[in-house]
Image (tube, rainbow, N blue to C red; front, side, top):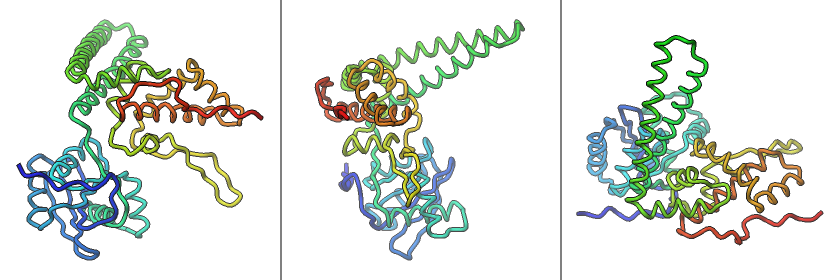
Length: 339
């Protein structure tokens, strides 16, 4: 089997040729940028057969390795990104906000699928890009199991609320009871599937066990972190930025605004980590001391919460990256300064 060309490091400089892909549910609009002025447009179906035709078209154009850029559109972009990455191309999955800002900086007036593909290609040819890598199959499957589990748990909670407030109509009550029984049974089946999956993948199971040693992290949160956090980031700060728990300073002249957060890649994961951070502030002496220090410095409650969450995420990533155990004596939080 022919091996694909080696990938560049995790961050690539602007290079040509660049392929911009505008992803829709059913179609892929392509723009291949060979040089500053030469564009080639094509459209394929967003199916496995269409992805094969896309790769064949690139080969017919004489392109052995391209920088393939596309916006993050969830499940619609995952399959084509994976196909291009396995074929040896350098793939970048872009934040749509960055592409929109780039288009506005060029004074773009029209918005069509064809024009969007060209903008994405120009962005890939001129901007430094973080290369995308798919999750390992075992981790990706665990992530899908847990996301399905979370969806059903939300549905179960919604049905329980409806039952509490529903009028006393027998048919309605019976419908709600049937729904609740099915959801409870399906959640039990999912839990068995997750347990079996972890038993078949002892490395993932060991990561989850180690993460539970972090104060504030229980089994559910440990599973979530092990499934959702990619391991290919260079360092823990990059993960914190991806998760959106790194503050950004906003100051211009005499105007100073409240610090905000950056990062929009994983909002659902970030939201699910709020309560573990609160638990760490209550039960971990080091986290509590760190929070008290920030509080005495005049930081807001939300800023303190994100600071503790930031530390927890960095600790979890370091343990996942190196498969190391939690060290409670490691100097993670700065010692409070006496005033």
